[in-house]
Image (cartoon, rainbow, N blue to C red; front, side):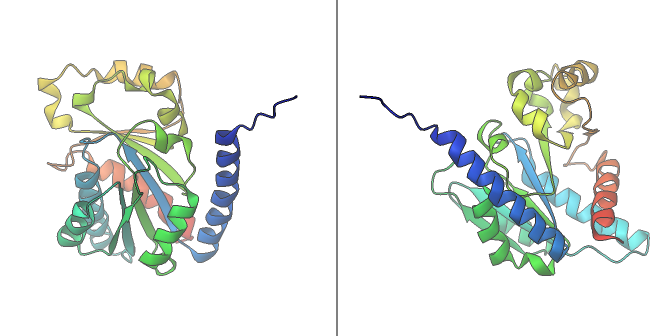
Length: 231
């Protein structure tokens, strides 16, 4: 008797890709820029988002531009610590998404979270994805663009160890550069390692804690969002 083999992972990913494309078109029609932010635990995602939101707000005020309407979705297996922190520190709306033990967010989860957040009334929505450098890279969330945050203590070899993550992103943020003197992190070595899987992604070196480098990163992001919105 012949045995049929079904590649479940391939089917799941293909179904998700279709959902993601539909969500991306919906967001474009509604005028919402959705940014997927990925990293390992402890890299400083939440602190980076807080610094980014504050810097974007300050830039808009300083340049006499209309402030972007910003919201945040925090994805975790459990707890609501990060969503509460975002609301308390920035005042922007945030929702906590519990994945039920799953180590990533997919397009359908994104759709549910965006609806709960009221994304159609927002210009920019950040997704702080579940913290790891493996699963989130495999699932398209429907985001306009994706970025990964790597912290200096993690080392400059991560593009070699997790090539799919660095291959899939549109920009790379290297956080905690204020700690560089303590760790063996070589900027040029990191750039060479990144070249092996993604030669096009811009790299931004910053310290979310001190604000160093935040202007360069936020200047790039602000331009991306306003071009998307036609402003």
